[in-house]
Image 1: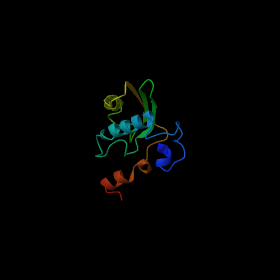
Image 2: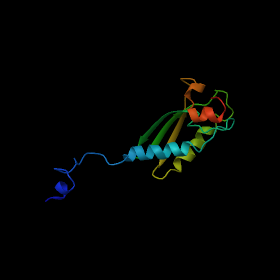
Image 3: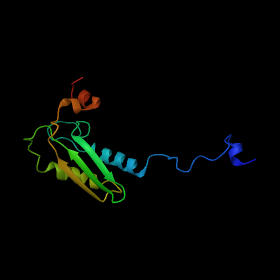
Image 4: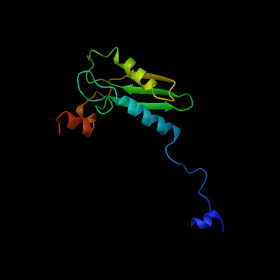
Length: 125
């Protein structure tokens, strides 16, 4: 009796079947966790749950992350320094070699982008 018959299977699983998250998915989860440690200076909620992150692009081969984010208002006083802070926080993620944050203003941020948890913590639900 083969081990596969003993396990009740007639053959081994296909080799290309993924087991667990891919390297890119694992890095993305870690980057998101890092983003959740950055808080808007005027609102006590992290930038990810506030919906300020519009896009995350990860190249696992070069370990580079591109992030598109916005601020709650174009005249926000941290517009010049905040992207650098976000880059530094993402660079602390093990396996990330470089990061670039681009501020975008389209589409404009609205409260609709906030997670339910963020709205709850701000008493909006």
